[in-house]
Image 1 (cartoon, rainbow, N blue to C red):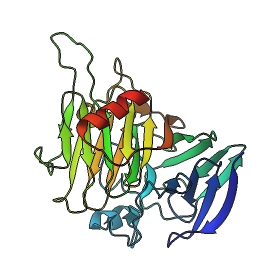
Image 2 (image 1 turned 120 degrees about the vertical axis):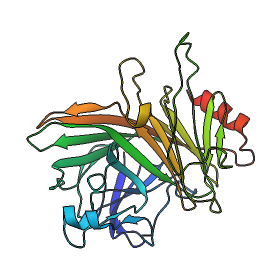
Image 3 (image 1 turned 60 degrees about the horizontal axis):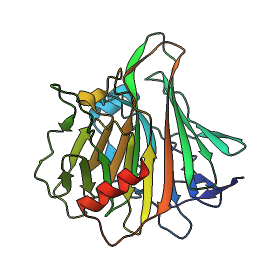
Length: 308
């Protein structure tokens, strides 16, 4: 059974602390929600916390759409968005109080409906006592019009970590089998990026040259982050390689990195959300201890093959 407690955490205000003995989690209640802390007992937080509110969206379009003084802040941790990315709608200022409901080993976090976007984005965490947590994400359409998009789950990972996944090796005959998508600010020869026939990996580097982002069709449905102090953080999710159409040129996985953090991002297929209906997307997290001494491409590739 899980144990919960409301406490103060850093400068985020109130958080709900949750533990099942195997994993410790903290979720913000005065903003977000963000899973702002997640870790194994005795290990460091796998997530990055933006205590200085350094990463934010304070552009004029935000105030024009949402109102004076309303801006979006990264905060860090885990969040849920709708893809494709679009300013200002994507950057909803989720700075209000969050309600929560505890049902057995599941905790549901319910933010207010996004008035301007007419969407509500909520998620639940279900704990299994063995290092696994299922994150059930739900987007509800409160408008009178249909909405198009994909569930987009973003984990803001700690510094000096490695985030990686496998490209498909499916035999498609005369047709292409792999998608590799680069954003305009990405340099393919960036030393933080490793790409070979199977592996796509990004090393978070506090001394790195600006930002980068790379996406691919992760048909295995698994993306892994190895933290500096030896926590293996695995995200697993279902992909639809036959009928699924994915955003951003066919990406079911995206990795963004800058000198402060890396984002490990999983995406659902694009869907139509009818009025009064919802889009559901589940991601399973697993945390376990891992060696810290060797992080070359061969080792990373072996690690992810072993978890599939």
